[in-house]
Length: 111
Length: 123
Image 1 (cartoon, rainbow over the protein chains, first blue to last red):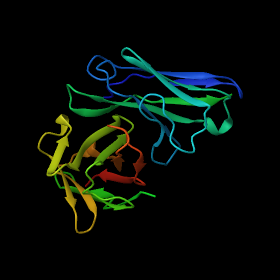
Image 2: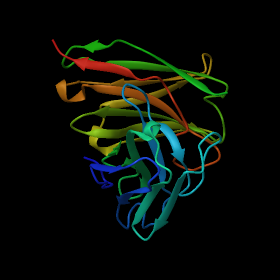
Image 3: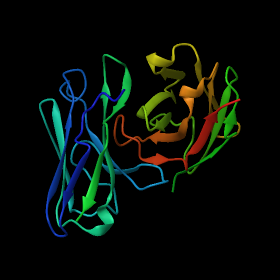
């Protein structure tokens, strides 16, 4: 049902850099509508991590960064830490659906 | 600090109506620059946006097309809350339901979420 496509999983060793892609279409990311990223720990609500493509809410470390290009976006995590293990979701708006749309989700594993 | 507190039953029988409430603190449901959303999450459907309400001189309502006429989102200014009603539920509506705020500083992001309510549709 998800409109935005993400890889199911990515992994990296502590200290490494990982990236998560988010692929959409011309009716959402490519329109262009802004992309936002969320982190979700098991049993908790998603938490806003990046908003409007590359902005961090207060309290989010600068190890997290976002970018958008064409119909895709990506989230980068540098200096990977054990605490970064979580599910990550991208989100945008789709004008053809007149709806907020989410990505399929990516599980980040720290090796 | 904005907080959202959800309440409602965790078990609903098939064909009945699912009703959840989200109480807002630290902001107003009548804010001219925020929007109030419902989202659900299930293993089969992932995160799914259900709808929103917002006030811009009058009340507006947007709903996911997939839900058709089954959904209603209603603001209650006297209690500073908004509610979700989903009619004619089936087991496919079993999910964790969240309320969330779309804040003034970004169009379409969701910066504050309720704690989530696990709703099971079963007889």
